[in-house]
Length: 386
Image 1 (cartoon, one colour):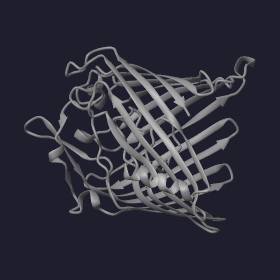
Image 2: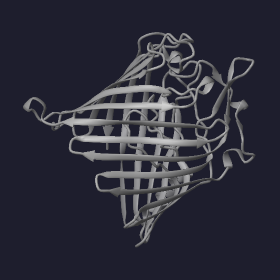
Image 3: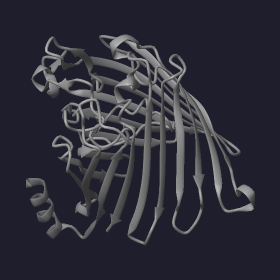
Image 4: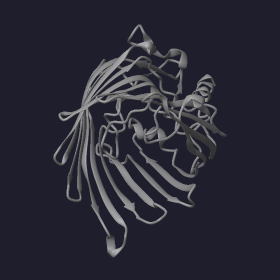
């Protein structure tokens, strides 16, 4: 509340004020009861306004993006967050951001491997694209030799999980009291990140370094069948590369992470787009990406040795209709895969309909997909933009 009061005070001194955002009604229909005999229906409401104040102080602006979700099934999924509360100061030779912000790194479609600044909001979606706001200071300079970003991250945010009565959670209840840290400073450890990016002819290159609290905790099962989380410290070097050759997009994300359990990982592949398919306005894209991660055992990720194949259809119509469908196939356990579908179209100038579907299949108990084998669902969202 105090952040919103501060915004109201700033409006009086700002020369330009803008309010926009979106409000959603979302319904998930599951095809089976979960492993805990969970409900089949999950309806929720989301509100995500955006306040923008230009020239708060000279060439400094303020962007505020609060977020709220109210869920009828899962009390944990009912949550409020501050996605952004960021001051941006633009000078002749640098930019400075300070507050709570969001940063995205990466180029691949099936997995955002190098995107490490913000913690994932697991309560929102399955694909990991929703992120929590991160307290930060970001200093950016752009020169002929490229762009350099320096980040100071003074506070860490833990993962949140669905409740035992919710859907798409873990097979075990998370013991919040058993969360531990490698650092004695715990969530107040000062993290640091550095990123260099540049264009080289047809190539876009990003090289990043991160030192601080690992966003992915180690998970251990306690004697009382609850899940304990341990956040280690890590040093990570990563690279993301994208090249454009005619109708081809070539993509790579790779990292080397030095932590309590060190590992390497990468995702690479291509997207090929054919325009005006069958003499229509429609574009058809084919996506193929390979995902590798050297971790195994209890901390084996979903993307240890997987192949993603998908297609993207862009109608190029007045309603902006699009469709993305694909399957991630485990090459070690051939019976394990995840299928997803995302389709959207504009209904009016302010309303948009989004349809999503996820299917999880696995008969191998040690495979990470096995825990979601009863979580297939269809989701319909009505989005209102103001």
